[in-house]
Image 1: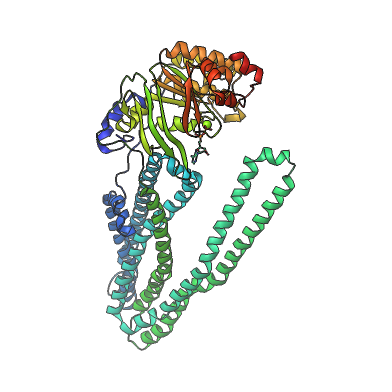
Image 2: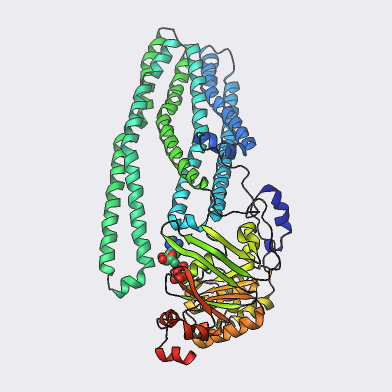
Length: 622
Ligand SMILES: Nc1ncnc2c1ncn2[C@@H]1O[C@H](COP(=O)(O)OP(=O)(O)O)[C@@H](O)[C@H]1O
Ligand SMILES: [Mg+2]
């Protein structure tokens, strides 16, 4: 089961206690999108999006139907006016009030329908938008580390946001455009049925309307890209000024930063002014084209009325239709442009969605329960996709309950071992086994609850300290949270805070030091009770004496948990039952600290480079 988002799993999720928050209130559960993007890459973008749109087809079609009615009523209004003028005013054969009421009612109904269909349209559009968004974010959570090594996640998110928006805008605009076209055809048909020549005069300015619209967009479109790019430039500079405020201050480089910002702001201002100028030049013409059309109709239609070839009502109605006819011509170019944009956006969204998660459960994957914690690397070779071999035929074995220190130079592959053990990356050759099971045969869920790793730069969420610690076990009682915090030597600094365990990380200037963060992370992993604990430099920022107490508490708490310690301190290494010496991605020696000191010159060599190690220390530990 991957992430439990499929429809059939939703029942399990409901029963899962992790869907309740600490105070017992149900947490809002994730509703999987109702539709998915079509997996066939050879289909066109609209076809690929269709399942997501079709998942909302009830609301969508209902909305379209109402829109159609509203638009037909819009066409009906001038027709009623025409009949009213001719029958009630010119020939006086019917009462005027009848037409006034009719106009009022039709107008009101149309307004109401417009209100409903617009609201419905936006609802559906946002439903599609949020489905697409959820689908994308869900996919991003499944992609492997390998993917994130290649791309910048911040960029993906911001690009995806604007891409989803452009697709959503198009999906909202396209039906409206369709309705405008229907309105055009019906109105044109009606006009032709009344007076062919007058209709021809009314459509005379339409090519001009289209041409002007295209010209305006051709000028505005490149400008809008420039504006967007420059807005991003300004945002980046502002962001760096805030993120890097300490560096900037320490080099007294404020002036330079402000100059840079001013330059970017000036460039943005130029682009904005150009945009406004272009609009100012074109808009008066475009806005007055309907009036030009009306004038033509009045001149020619007025002649017809005087000559008795048309009724005054017809003339009235036609002046109203002129405006209606121009709408699609004004919008069609915009529609095409939005379509092109949405298409490009959709293809970028598909690019992410088509990226297959590399590391997934095998169909027959088994759950590892109550692991003993035996770890074996069997002839493992591995390299990151961007570089050469990191591990070369590495073999090692750690017995259940054993504490092993992995020692090696920087870059020798220690952290890589930790990442492979949790299957964040897939080995190129050989196998990693836990309790004799190849980890590729285990479910990721059970593997990752068996292997708990803490790194030197742990990530904390912007929630309370208690919630950070209880991340893996959201329903853990407070007493348990406090117990693991004590073991990780974190309770002293937490209880010293005014809000204690409820202090929110990163809020109101309250930030933790590196060592405090590491202790929270250790507590968090302890609470999950892993059978195999990996401490990858996890105590690098913690004081030696505190570290010793942590190790004592760990031993007491975890009992016979298998522990891999990657450490840069002699004191930590000395605590291990056994030391494995790594060099250039290979195990070059294994034995107790004493044995290695006696027999392995490379060991003493590596140790002499460790933090705080003087040759005398190394001698002392002998
Ligand atoms: N995500 C990554 N992508 C590409 N290369 C990496 C990545 N992580 C580590 N490496 C490279 O792999 C080698 C081993 O790294 P690592 O296991 O982190 O070493 P250690 O923890 O022993 O210092 C180094 O040469 C490092 O540059
Ligand atoms: Mg490392």
